Length: 64
Image 1: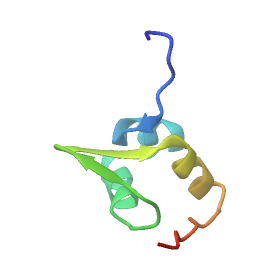
Image 2 (image 1 turned 90 degrees about the vertical axis):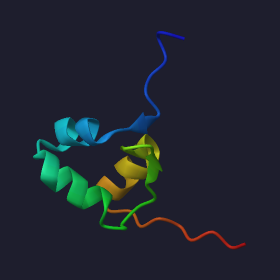
Image 3 (image 1 turned 60 degrees about the vertical axis):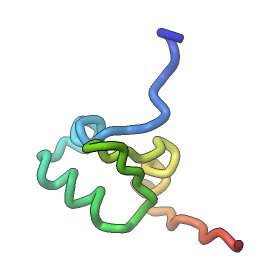
Image 4 (image 1 turned 45 degrees about the vertical axis):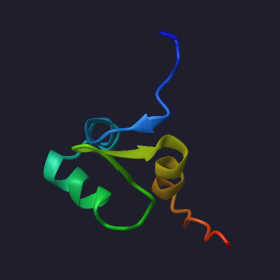
């Protein structure tokens, strides 16, 4: 299990990937542009969702 790659990205991961400050990363997480999970005090985003958003892809709306 130690070799598994992260699936969920935290604010600090997004900061490193984008080279941005903590307040800017929180602003992006709270923007509503993509699905974010709040677990306790942590904000998490699935890596695929974030990377697709970063590439300019819009999230697909689920039909339920």
